[in-house]
Length: 291
Image (cartoon, rainbow, N blue to C red; front, side, top):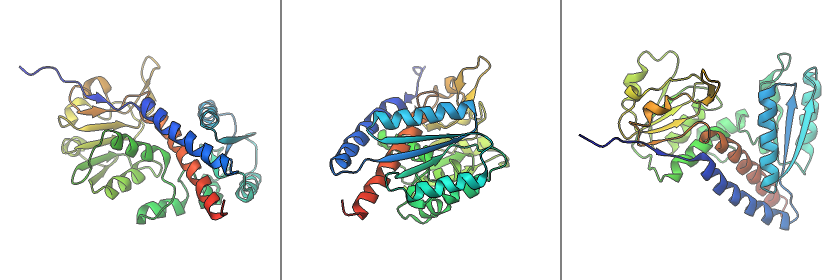
């Protein structure tokens, strides 16, 4: 009889602390050269979840020695006025990163808004230029959530070379960039989605599984190869209204080798990578201006 096995946790809170301490050190070095790293966050409308996210982002900036500007606009703000605000921030040398909190009200074209942000300030990594840079392996800004997932794999010294990684979900924000980042590290990558006929057949082959579909219990214990690394990007609520991910955590942790919890896993890493991207934008701007 083998002893009961429980996966090791990849603690996003602990890793975030470490990375944010590094951000604070680098931010202080920039301030000493007369550059205050700055992030502008634009919130349109009264979406309560967005308000929480934005508050957390602003607080994280301040805690790490970055300057942040929060712009709140009524849901009635016109698309033209929003584009005008972005244009002004693009020209503002004290702002190194611009983030427009999604979702936007229905009358505003989110794609148009994201494309209006200067690629040099696209710290969310959503601009087509950022996506293209990731695709061809050029320096640019990586989307914060998959970037955070890569840092988590790095933190456990996991060598992806030759490993089979399965990404569940194909969004432009997580699934697709995640697959490209894994590919860059020489993993063999399979992307699964709603039209994949036999998800379990795919995930059982995987050394690494990234679940990013926003649906509870998409991954259960019988779908996981013993010892696999499971990264849960999902943010859902269970029947008791508690935060949970896409993975059946209690079941899967009995099979997996490593697993990320929800909450306290990928969530804090997303905001941390936003700080890293903003800092990087400020460092690039400083070196371009010769400071």
